[in-house]
Length: 192
Image 1: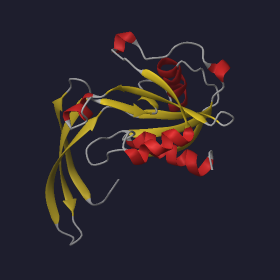
Image 2: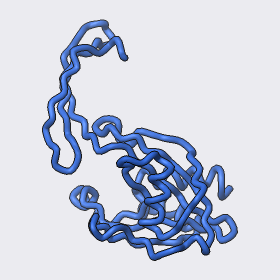
Image 3: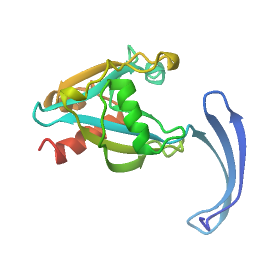
Image 4: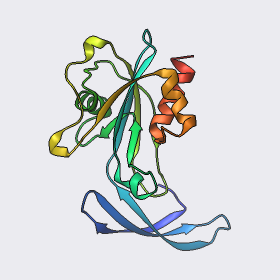
């Protein structure tokens, strides 16, 4: 572990949706002095995300759904355009993203390629997000997608031209970090 941290204590604050913990610990600062710090961290598990793309059509598959946290923080209608994603739960990242792609977009993908992993909000959330890409074909569309009713998902599936989707970053129509990262990856590595 880190020799700059000792006396780590964890207290559960909430176990409503996922778990919110308060941590107290002693941290040796850059001057070599020990100071007691208190932080809260939200543990919702790890997740996976994927950008589905078609090189011959020059398109990508994205989703649109209501996201309450964006609504209460100024996103007027609360709708967010984003890449398909989900929590791992008991799955490994690859199995998770294959399942989520089918549930959310209706596409059955078989060969997702992991491109990297990243902490998305390391100041307050423990989650590591595993990033994937996969090429889709029209025959891979096996159902409508849209998410699971018992999870109260109401997801719109969007097939967009890559240039249009990439332009939506600059216009502010796409404001989701994972989606921006995947579209930028695609600009550098797929749709050059």
